[in-house]
Length: 136
Image (cartoon, rainbow, N blue to C red; front, side, top):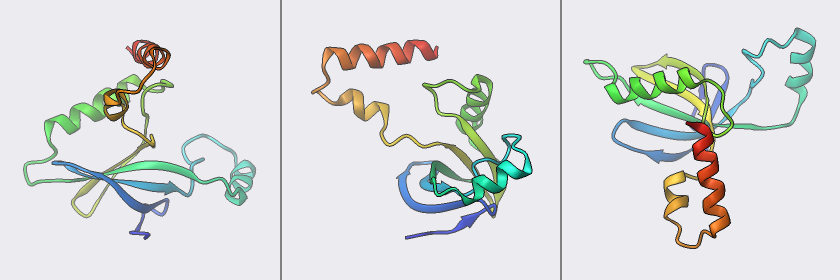
């Protein structure tokens, strides 16, 4: 069930996670080319494309005291890292109705749950470790 449309761009689809700081929604980025430097003609072609771009949209409540330190640290570290194929990238950050929204790459699984899976082969473990080490 569609929840809402944010920033004239992000369509929240379903809640996929929740924690002490907020919620995460599987969302559709209806204008993924924004901020890429595309020219107007390329933008028009992209608008007609039927490719759906999914993102994870974190919704964090802003308290009177401000954002939690851990949230600020997460944003800072991810912005400093920039683009890396093995680390989720922040696509957009915006504010609305006493909430901060962070649009980031959508991953269909959590590394923590994948690693806890007892049926990983040695090849899978080596591949995961290689990806982790390439990110640091």
